Image (cartoon, rainbow, N blue to C red; front, side):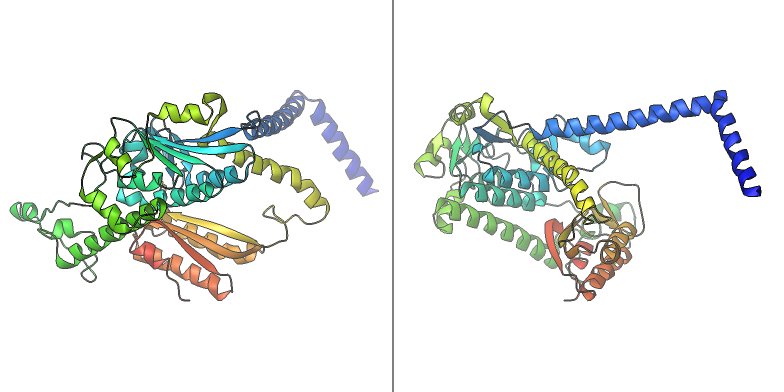
Length: 440
């Protein structure tokens, strides 16, 4: 029949191609790619297993959180420049850092936690001093406080601030989450209130006859006041003072709660200015005056130390292995879903960090309205397991149009009876506040 003849011709053609030099090369290449692919999978799996077993050889280890060694960021998917600026410090996602501390609390092999730092407050650990990173400090502090509720913890800082050149208030606030706080003999508590200053260029621009057109909505929208004003306006000053006072009160409250003293006692210590380590010990602001090495030796020394970074990476690798191991059985039971999970409900975490742009962009640390909107609108149809969404917002604002597009997508989720909970990071201003406040 014609069908049999067509089949025979096709078989003959395939055989001729297979036997030709080109066909042989294609087959060899395909085999090589198959082997390489399988080999790559094996290597990846072996790498995950090796990473997940970081702490298994240390049955009684302590979690070593060296603030000078690890840079904790909201996300670690920044550009190449971010990694250069981090220097020798390892970059760790905030969520991974918190998960690692929480896991260590439940890990029977983990005996304690040591939080340590030289007390420097610039570059890699600026989140211990910068107002713009207060929320990061507070998130980590809460995790350490939770750990301390069941296991011993020690904060060992060489100093908290230095001779008035840097403010150690946030570093000290973090340290007091631990059960015990130590300071080096030559260190001190240089903890002060918050202050800020801003340059104003209006007179400079007027001198050079440069006219600047600024569109401002109400008196508290002060992003461009540095260019349009000669000094702080009433609204600008009021907003800035309120921000500083609020953060200061939060730090004082956390310290007082941990030390079991009144807020006035904490503010009195701050009003005293620079407090040497010996005086801080007498005032019961710290528990011991000693060098960090002594604290590490007591905890078990280098042989029993597992860094927070390595432990966090091990935890992430273990989670990946658990998914790999569980998937075959889920698939055989017909429980696997397109997003790789089970049929049970899940909570989606959507992180929106950076300036808000309308459309798309190749820049790092920005929120693309198009990308964010597509993701949020995709959840109801493509992710049926998701029963709620946590929106993590860390943004100073940006495009009004882009903010409105994201706001509409968040509102649509709520209309489809998917609850949205907003978790604000270091900043949620202007457009960042806009997308955080959809109609209830």
